[in-house]
Image (cartoon, rainbow, N blue to C red; front, side):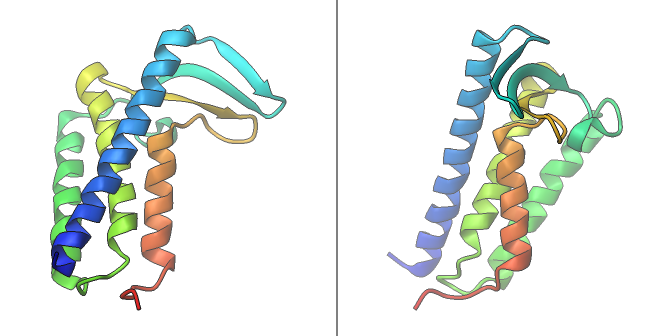
Length: 151
């Protein structure tokens, strides 16, 4: 198997895993926690069933179809950029899969419900979901981890 095929397979598998875990976790919360209800797990951590119609942390109010389209274009542009720039065997495809999988997980919510299901409520932070975690981790790894080919 060529390095490019392996790279693509890693990104696709990561993306699929993120979407699956994200959508599964949101479905569990929607089916077991009433909308607006809070279930305390630890003094600083609760599960809630809330909807976010805005962008990150509810900013910007309702998201328009134009913003959803712009997000899809940005994801495609990111893929094209990485494919043109990354060396075969580069470790960049794992964080790219995290970022794209998280974005697709949230876009799936928007397409289905018109809003993103958020459920992780830390007492000191805005409510979020696992797709958000994948997006932040993917961006952080893309920014802070230098591109290297495996030895």
